[in-house]
Image (cartoon, rainbow, N blue to C red; front, top):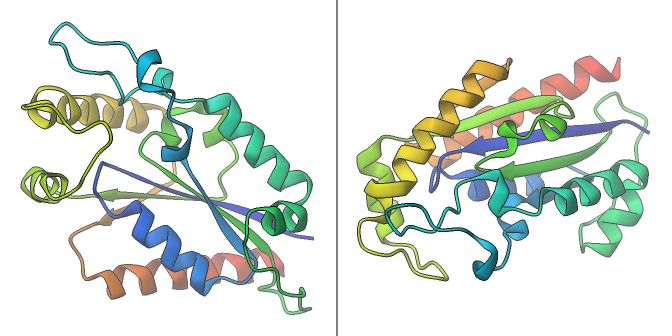
Length: 200
């Protein structure tokens, strides 16, 4: 049984979830684990000197639980997928057959134990203006306070990205402003090629 873990990282509103879900639909025996599902309760997230909640740090996430879920998939992909509502198809004999776990999130490449597990790493990036436009149209719980993007989110993105680039290799950077269909087909083809190579 071959098991492959693909990381879809990137900035807020960069298109990580859309790309991940689309890849899941295209890749047989695949499922998605999203970092956003592991945020700590709002009462546990500290506040910075400007009064902004510090959500854009690893400390705001239950990374131990996330790693536990990934470990469960590694031990038993079929059982994990079945319990999480992911379609399981009989494995074929062709080289491209594999179980694929897609891990998506804004800080997945900043967590060293997790980063070491990826067979392929993608990072979606978009310009500040696009990020601001997309974020303003999203509804967050709790909602963004005034000035949150400029005063906290964007500076933390730059800080986290710098730390990532200083410690992580082999990241494929993607333009999140590309047409959705183009982006999906490009990444899907790249993963398919990787599966064929590793399956030989």
